[in-house]
Length: 208
Image (tube, rainbow, N blue to C red; front, side):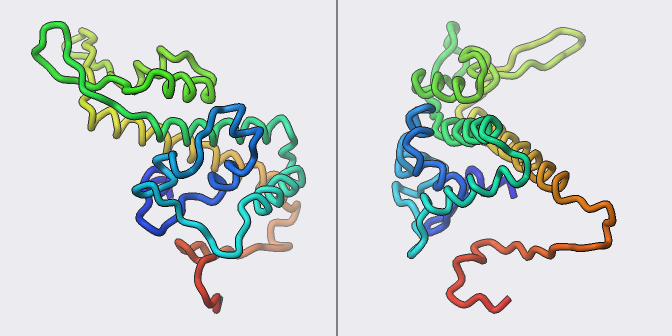
């Protein structure tokens, strides 16, 4: 469910792995991650939803111990944490209004170059390439390439779409690895049923 990556309501949590990730000081330091209260995709008006009786640090330790069972060792785990960090940093990019040289049009610019540099580092791409990708697109009109700059709203939509696409691609990769390891020679030998409901794990009474 991609929309949750960039859009949560008051009292809701984003995907738990994001909060778990932030409990590791080494990861936070490596990718210059601020606390959840300062990450736009994890808070609503500065408020971060917490789960009573649940330790994100302990849950993260469980995740890290489980991943090798599916063939995801330390090097690939580090790549996963880097990609998740990139999503958080991208979600924090803000845009401000700029004017072109002619003063005829208004378009977006990245409001904080340092934030852009952090996101680009986590993505493993050039800062300039990320800036261009977020702020403009090329369209072909009658065989001629024309650069169209984004408004602030369009740049925000582009940023959010990139966050969702990156997370979805990572999710698909993890599921693929789990399926590859758990696949049986006899597909009918066993099965696992999963019920997925928003906030299901937060219900006071689990009757499933």
